[in-house]
Length: 568
DNA sequence: CGCCGCCGCGCG
DNA sequence: AAAGCGCGCGGCGGCG
Image (tube, rainbow, N blue to C red):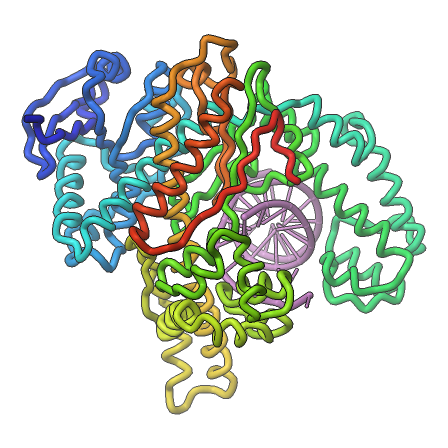
């Protein structure tokens, strides 16, 4: 008979020591060990049987372990779990959790050298003492055990915590980045790297052509107000300088201006300065922020990890002897919508094919492009234009799915909350929002206040409409990642060349290298690539089963094995 | 000088 | 073919 798995809770006892407490699932302590403050990694190495860690913040404790060459199987991240549980409508009594408000402090983004030692930066700090850690763990375990649907919420907390581990690991592994390819792309697009303070030749040339077309050799192209006034002087009645509006006009300045804006964007966002700062040592190491978006999506901080332009993807390049497995899910969000609404007809249209093609095949709309616009419009709440025009056809064909998002929108417009499939609940409306609504319903409300109230109500309705879909898609993606992480770890280390930039833990094993909402990149020894590709697909199926059980929706992947991550 | 909001645009 | 959701970042310019 095996014992019930214990949790191991790590906390800061004093400036000199940390404490590891072994506890049962109900939080009752069974053993405690005191360690020197720098003894955590060696303790973990000496206790490989420990497989479930509890800590206040993964970004605080895990980088130290990774740096020491240690990977942890699973954890319970108290900060992330607190954020979910204290807001979730599946939790019956939020009061104990909400009273522990110090847990709402934002997470630290710590590097290994500062994680355990930097204490005096003035930022709000998470609780870290043993009594505080244990008390919160017990509050959370109680909230989970007594929740309306404990299994779903436990799955969500486990997936969120696994995501925190993965985010730390992604930073250690990094995206294998070929600076030579990046430089070649920049040079082809912008001209060769200029000396400091100068513009690359092609950017300078485009700027000169814009100024010539405007008849103004001095105008600043980087200042929106100045550029807009210059356009007006040249006879263009533009209301903004955004690309989609400029494209409407027929004028000699438009082509070079759009060219300038495109090049200027590449230069300032991902030019040579970015290359110098973010791609040192053959790796791009983005800072991911798990749970950084209210819907549960990850955010990023620094480096623009979630905005890498497609143009630069050829610079993502496997190490010698290694390759990349690049996988993304086709139409993740509408598939999730079919599943959470139990809309069999939409699931049928999605099965075994491109979901948009499936909708066309059912005769709902005429073309794939129309299907795409209609589906996006339905999930985002479009009301005007072609998208708004196409949504009613979708509503007739898929009343369950559309009813689900329409209901979510109605709840949001009234000021209510909605929840994802696993129980992440949307935030309450702000005090300002409620005041606008209350003011509009006053008998002597000023003319126009009703319009403002209706507008902000509809804004919030679009948010809650999208929340249920985007948030559940994020849950599916976390489950996919977490399961894949385990499968990859079960593979044998490679006897071939090491991926020396990927850190001690990963340099001889297939490892996740990039994640972007519905896409992953695995960096793998060439010999393991097919096995990895199979694992990626099996994990997608496992995620489907974990979230949606027997409901017949599938999540088809586009999986490519390639030395670089160029798209199409 | 730093801070902050706005604009525009990259990603899903 | 639309301008509907969620983000982060760079550059500018107003403000204290």
